[in-house]
Image 1 (cartoon, rainbow, N blue to C red):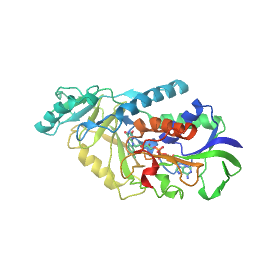
Image 2 (image 1 turned 135 degrees about the horizontal axis):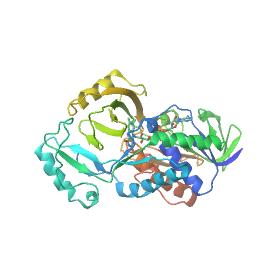
Image 3 (image 1 turned 60 degrees about the horizontal axis):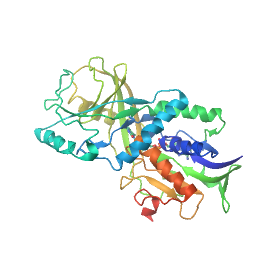
Image 4 (image 1 turned 90 degrees about the vertical axis):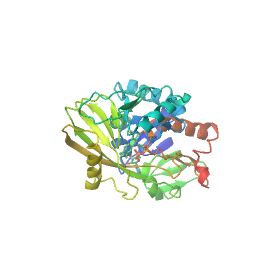
Length: 346
Ligand SMILES: Cc1cc2nc3c(=O)[nH]c(=O)nc-3n(C[C@H](O)[C@H](O)[C@H](O)COP(=O)(O)OP(=O)(O)OC[C@H]3O[C@@H](n4cnc5c(N)ncnc54)[C@H](O)[C@@H]3O)c2cc1C
């Protein structure tokens, strides 16, 4: 078999890069071993405002300009729905926070998203004595469904290998590699936290953060917006909500824990007072980098090896733009911005 690219990992990063290759009529094969699941468990929210401090997310405008059409295109391609508009209601904790909200609303970058009003809480199931700040033009991507559709397509096209990629089996030649009889120009590693096992790139400083989420059934909550307080409560339809997420920098497993569940319940109960039933509990590891920026670029010594990782807590917004920049860099030699290039860690 002869291809232009091998992609290792079919999460948000792998799909974003595969789509670039489709557009440019490049051939590829994907290896995926289900060892990580960040994209599968993600809340899938996109939101350009940091809800703790009411500041703009790094590079948010440029990311959204690429990301939203990207997901719309995939909806068309698969004749499916992945994009759901969801407003965000941030519960104010104090009057000072209300004041800070109005100050932030004046910033040009945030004007399209932050409503300069205090939204009164009329929902008896929510405790919000200081009421809400409302964000619009935000939403959720059904990443799990999208990954599943994409995987099925690759299987149909005979370009999906449900196998662990074994780094030691790469044979290097001047301008290509051979891996288990597949000749390829390049390998793009999109392994998320799997990076830690990659001997070519695991020198890069990933500071992964495990996250746990609950799915609850709460028929009396009746919220068609995301509620953000100590945790978020995200409506996913049929009176179900995702509640999350924890941050744990010590536990490196993707196993849901009792501690994680307890933490989420305690935080949820501080602002929700209706009954609910826990339906599901999941966990995954966010591929976060020490400086909270993506990892993009070509290996210094082995030019056939390339990385697309470090999507951190915001893979939905970041992945499509990073895939585009990486492709332009590899194929058209357009330099990568310093803050995303892996060269910053040389
Ligand atoms: C609880 C939680 C909530 C989140 N909520 C949001 C959110 O609301 N919005 C948002 O934008 N982001 C969110 N994120 C972050 C988001 O999930 C990540 O940024 C993104 O999914 C990372 O995508 P990825 O493709 O880099 O990694 P992954 O999704 O982990 O994909 C990597 C893939 O590579 C495969 N792989 C690894 N090594 C190998 C190998 N050797 N051989 C074969 N396959 C391999 C893995 O099996 C995996 O499928 C959340 C994350 C968590 C954990």
